[in-house]
Picture 1 (cartoon, rainbow, N blue to C red):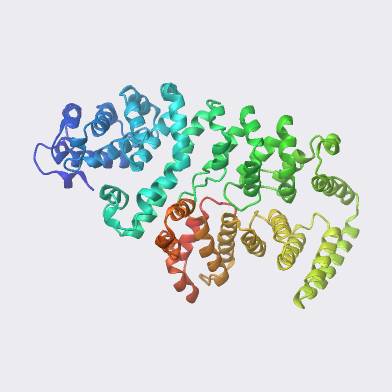
Picture 2 (cartoon, rainbow, N blue to C red):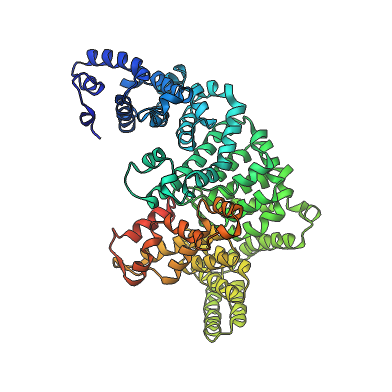
Amino acid sequence: MALEQFCTKSSCFFCLMKEPDSSARRAAIKEYLKHVPFLDDEELILVVSGLWNVAMTRPNDEELPSLGIFQCMADLINRGIHDRTWLLTHQNIYIPYYAAHIIGSYTMNKVDFAVKAVESGVIPPLLELLRGKMSWVEQRVAIRALGHLASYEKTFILLSVYEDEVIKLAMNLASSCLEEVYSMFVGVKDRRKRLKYHSDLLTRGVGGVETENRKAEEWASQLQCWSIHLLNCFAVKERSISIICKQEFLQELSEMWGGLVNHSSPAGVGLIRILCYSKIGRENISKSSYVVENLCKLSRSSDDWQYMGIDCLLLLLKDRDTRYKVIEIATSYLVDLIELRNLGNRRNVGEAITRALLYDNKHMHSKIKNVHVRRALEETWDFKVERRKKEQITCDEKLEGKRAMVKLIKQQGNHKFLVGETEEAHVKYTEALEICPLRHRTERIVLYSNRARCNLLLGDPDLAISDATRALCLSSPPNSHANSLWTRSQAYDMKGMAKESLMDCIIFVNVCIRSKADDRVKIPYYAVRMISKQMDSTWLFRAAQLKALNKLPEKAKEPSETTRIQVQNKSYISGLSTILEEPFAGKDGSWRKMMERAEGRNKTL
């Protein structure tokens, strides 16, 4: 809203802001800001919301930061925390939120502003909000502001005075905030029982329960991700690593993701990767098979942060002290990625994985007890070293002869598959893969994809995932082969891996959309059903909701409540029936926008 719209009298703050004389304006604003914390009428909320508007639209403008805005906001937060009568007067309940938000906006980009903020004493009142002196809404903007202060060397030193408490508060928030937001807001069915100022801040008075819930989901995800970011700022300096590396927290961290509402943050895996760069971090992470397994699952998914999962595993494998603690878990996942060329801006990823797996190959048999893991590593050696050598000395004529033979065997496999002889088709595809030259990546994509489909029909989702992953690694760009994506999505669904299934299905639909020459695309019905199903299972508040339902007496539990709340929080699911009946309408259609948003930062397609 324009500042002029707030102006109700000739001598108000907004008139001062419009003063054309720069010197007079600055002097008047500086004096006015000193008295803002002592205002006791409804003008205060207008002034603070106006300042918030300026901070949001002009965060790099130095005028207000140089005139005492940080001292003013710190005083307002302190007054809100310590003077309950004042807080509950007029609309002052909104003031601490706006004040912390203003601090965060101005310290977001400029270190000079951050230094001024710290010198003005903003850290203690922000910590009070972080301790939960008000609510999760204020905690969200407080941890955002503290995260900005922790990002600069000059202000990190002053924040680190409170290091132990900050770390423990951030860890607790990251672990508990979703349950808190659900129990205090989203899970409150009766809108009248929700805190009105929370609803107003979330939606600005526009929209009903569905809009509030959707926005609350976004804010809860931000609260968790900003808590992790604050921990990152300490971990990257190898501070408080031993506190952060508590086994229970690491397990929780490995399951934290930004969700579809906050796709720009790597969430838990981002912090785990930073921890993997330190000796203490690697030691603690390698002790948890649960965390290592979650990293493996991420490394073999189409998630935007797949490369981070791979990075973590490579760091663990290269460390002699952690290598043999994780290799027996990681091998079965990483062997499927050895032909991955590029992933984002990373080059020769598969080669790096191969070197990490085969490192210390001479002592492999004595140190690895698992027979299956030893066999997988031996096969990797044969495939990446021996077979490559043989093909390099084989003449092109012989290789082309093998290619023709592969084509014939594949046709036989296709015929077997079409007449329902799945096991025989599987044998044919395997035979073709064994002789297909490594250079013929396109043919091998199809063979792996077809064999993955056979594995799925034969009821072996693990082998289906393995073959589909190998096909997706061969595709260019990676994770862009539609049939393999859909097969793997189904296989993940069979194993109950909802997040991985959802991501594959979303990328599958994107590939389908982008492969069409015209602008009218029908979304496959089966893909829509899969997305709808997995959205229910991966809803950000799913665990909190189940926990709340388990606390209710049996008679109070409503069977339809789960679906009702989840669908309420997924605006794009509500339009599925229309999408199923009508073709995709143009480049600006709602379905395309939803898919692009859900896909997030995945730039590989």
